[in-house]
Image 1 (spheres, helix red, strand yellow):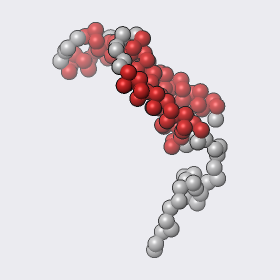
Image 2: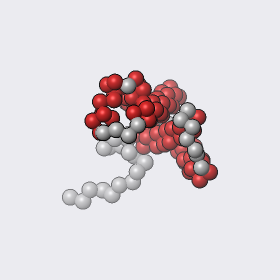
Image 3: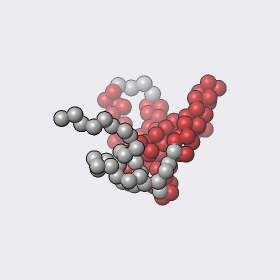
Image 4: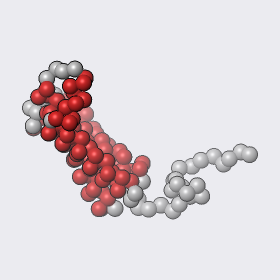
Amino acid sequence: MWIALAVLLIAIMLGAAGQICLKFGLAKLGSQTPFVVVTAMFRDWYVLAGFVAYGLSSLMYLFVLSRLDVSYAYPFVAINYVFVTFLAWLILKEAVPTLRVVGLVIICTGVLVLAASYRGPQPDSSDGLGTAAIERPANQG
């Protein structure tokens, strides 16, 4: 589990770095036509790096999904909001108002509650999806 969580954290950080690269690259273009923006991914190193970071992040997330329940792993992606906001403040010099910081603290609290919910592998239910913890009504007919 710890390896999967470490890979998940790296995937989240790559996603955040990709977001910052995209914003930085597109900010250099200024206000342009959609065609110029789309073709920028082939001409601008930062935009290309952003897409590569997203691609690597997605591949790593696939590894994570092969080892953790999606209902446990996916909410961790919310940490991406925290990383992106921090990097936007640090690198792009964006203002981060207090109310936004409060929201990020709430996100972090939610992720910590989620992390505390881990109980290890659960026995498989008869449906083969590992959903034994969720009560479902029996099929009628």
